[in-house]
Amino acid sequence: MKKHYLALVAAVLLLTGCGRRTYADFTAPQQGESTLQPVDSIYRESHYEGVAPTQEPTLRTVRSADGICVIDCKESYYDVTLDYTQGSYYAAGAAYAEAIRLAREDYAAYCEGYLYENIKAAFPNLNNDYTGIQKRVDAIYSTLDRKYQEEIDGFADKMNEGAEGFVEDGILSRDEVVLMQLVPDVLRGTSCSALSASGEATATGERITCRLLEWQLGSENQMCSGHTVLHVQNGDKSYVSVSMLGFMTILTAVNDDGLLLGELDVGSGENMPYTLDGKTSYTYALRYALEEFSTAKEAATYLTEHAKRYPYCVNVLCTDAQDAFVAELAVNEEDGTPVIREGDSPLNDGLVWEDPAYLCAVNSFAAKGNSDGLVHNVGNIVRWNRYADLFCGQRDLTLDRFKELMTCEKIDDDGLTRIRGGGLVHMLIADYSTHRMQAILTATEGVTDEQVFVDLGSWD
Image (tube, rainbow, N blue to C red):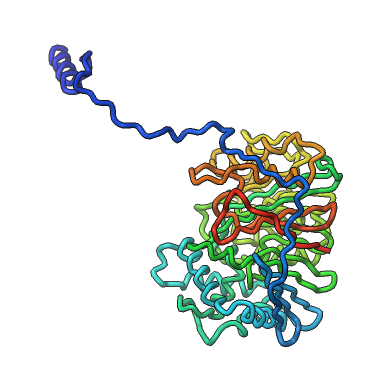
């Protein structure tokens, strides 16, 4: 047996060439240039010191016949005012749709095309069967406060042209309009991140909050042609929402008390089935919080208390002049417990954050005991650590220097994870020393190194 084994080994060695010492017939393959880069090479110099954000002129103004909605068409965004003191929620929705048709004649086709790109990305195997999506839309819509339903009804009645159901035909049906307002609740969002610096870290002694929204920009970056700053004027329920034209749900918004809310999708619980039992919209819960509360703690508490009713796990950044929290909204036991995380809260094992003057959020829970989609997720941990490297320990930070740090990474098509990814819709900065907002609004050419900040005005 041993002899047979030795003979077999010898044969294998001859076949594979092992044991030979000559390479006369070997030709080294051609090697391309290495794609490895020194870490420092991903950075660039970014200069904003002494550079004021751009004030965009109004190119034209349109308004609804009843005057409830006024749209100033700027160079890179629409500045919309909805005055709820002049009419009902239904009237406000209808006025918004009427003014949109005047501001953008191609709106229905533009919006529907982008909507179906989101549908197909979320459900690639639908095969034109929208029954499941219809059930989700109807179920979530039915749980909304009646005033929000009336607002959507007004928008849909004025916008649609008799179309029904889900048909990609360039015409917005009522069902498509309702889905527009519930995309994060029905289809989910994508990558986002946020950082809030307390007055302990800033030169003015006042908070700076930055929130990055990343989504699908569209096959032709068409989403970037619909940036909108929506001013809701409604007495003590007033707020400013930074979103897309026609969207009344909340992605990033600040009320007139300085309460800022921004939602960040959390990728945990992917194996949990979508259930409609007792579920409601978390994006409209954010809107309710903006209308009803004046502090970050009140909003974070309300959202965590109702987390089990939301269809998906999300983080919600909640800041005001004094405080900053991340409401980690775990919707089931597998993902953890709804909790309010602060800058010095205990974190999951392997996760480090060394400066409680800053609060960071990415697309994962971070609080001790909640599901960990961060430590072993490259996209999340790289962004988390990049924020830590850039900001932790920084003191006397000016707003201009804050902007330089937020934009110091090169935008290269090399597949590396960056704070500003290829799907960046907007980077919104709220400066609590001036009560003003400014933002990078990605243009239709996509995310580039040289992007300017635009002054979006005050939230007061």
